Every structure is written in C-alpha cells, then in structure tokens.
Image (cartoon, rainbow, N blue to C red):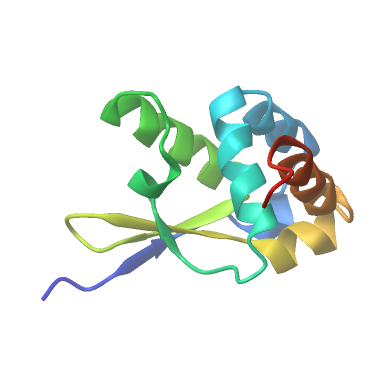
Length: 111
C-alpha cells in the first residue's frame, strides 16, 4: 500500500499577488468556485472537476493552486486528492471564499 503524501504551501507566506494570479485563470477559478461552494470541505479527486483540458494542463492548474496556498494535495500514488484550505484562506483573506461561493450561486441558480 502506498502511503499518502500531503503537499501544501506554508500559510505564513500566502501572498495576495500569487492568489490573484491563481484565480486569474478561468479553469482554476472554476475549481475554486466549486470548492468554496462545497461547505463540507471534503477531499475531491482532480478528475472530478470536469475541466476541458489535457492531463498535463490539469496538473499545472492544480500545482498553481497548491503553490498559491489555496489547496492541499494528497498523493495516493495513482491519484491525487485535493482539499480547500478554508480555515487558512479565511484567516488570511477574509471574505474571499464567500465571494467565490456567491459566484457559484450566481452561475448555478438551481443548486
């Protein structure tokens, strides 16, 4: 059995510029909107986001989100799980996740 390895950026170095650059891409923003709207904060696989991009591009997008400190990744060997770092983001950037969750409600009014 492969041991899970969690990778995440240090929350002390969460930089507003890096966060805004990460959110500047529509695909990464879509991932963050979904994660912010899901109050369970459960772990999801990278493939569960239905991004219309190649595997390599998906990997790049999730690495960018991780390096910005927005998500943590757990490597299980043959798959990766991602989890929103809600407490850390709320502490460093109050209201940011509320804005993203509101965008989810605006785009998905039936949800």
